[in-house]
Length: 225
Ligand SMILES: *[C@@H]1O[C@H](CO)[C@@H](O)[C@H](O)[C@H]1NC(C)=O
Ligand SMILES: *[C@@H]1O[C@H](CO)[C@@H](O)[C@H](O)[C@H]1NC(C)=O
Image 1: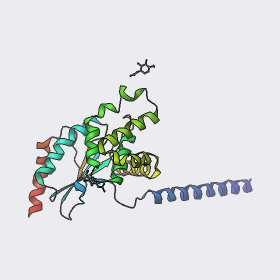
Image 2: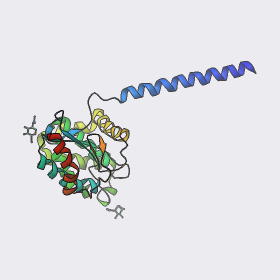
Image 3: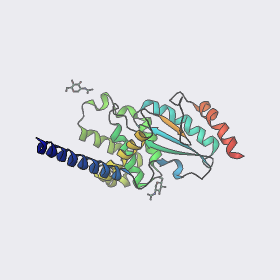
Image 4: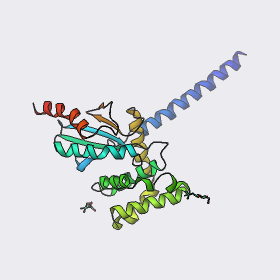
C-alpha cells in the first residue's frame, strides 16, 4: 500500500514538474521583442509627452465612432505633446475581427505609414466584413475578400506581400500578442483607452472631442510647467 502511495506521489510530482516547465516555457515565449502597438504618425513618444493607448477592434462600430474625435483632439494638441499608440483587440463575438486585425499587422510590417490609412478604410466600410455580407462565405473566401480590400486600399505594389502576410505565422503571432497585451491590461471591450497608463473609465464612443479636451487639458497644462 505504501509503495503504491509512493508511486502515486512520484507520478503526481513528475506531472507537476512537467506542467510547471511547460507553462514556464510558454510564459517565456510570450514576451515580445518590442512593445506592442502602432504609433500614430510613426512617432514614439518623447519622455514627457502624454501617451494615449487605444484598444480598437477594426470591425467594432463603437471603435469607429470614437476615432474621429480622438484624432481631432490629437491634432489639436500636436503630436509633440500627445502621442497615440493603437493596439488591435479583436473581440471574440465580432465576425472577422481577428482577420481584419491581422491585416493591420501585415500592412504595418510592410510600411508603417499606411497602417492608420487601412484602419480608417476598415472603419469606413466595416459593414462589408460582418453580418450578412460574410455569413455565407467560407473562412478562405473571407480571407481573400479582406486581402483584396487591403490591396485596393494600400496599393497593388504590395499585392504579393499582403497575400504572403496572411500565410506568415509571424503576423498571426503579432495579432495574438496584441490580444494578450490587452488582456494583461484588463481590457474586455472596445474602444478602451488609457492615458499615461491609467484607464479612462468613462471612455466609450460617447467620449467625444469635448470629452477628450476635458480629460487632456489639465494634463497638458501640468506638462507645460
Ligand atoms: C510607404 O507609404 C508611404 C505613404 O503611402 C509612401 O510615401 C512611401 O514611399 C512608402 N514606403 C515604402 C518603403 O514603400
Ligand atoms: C445564404 O445562403 C442561403 C442558402 O443558399 C440563402 O438562402 C441565403 O439567402 C443566403 N444568405 C445571404 C445573406 O446571402
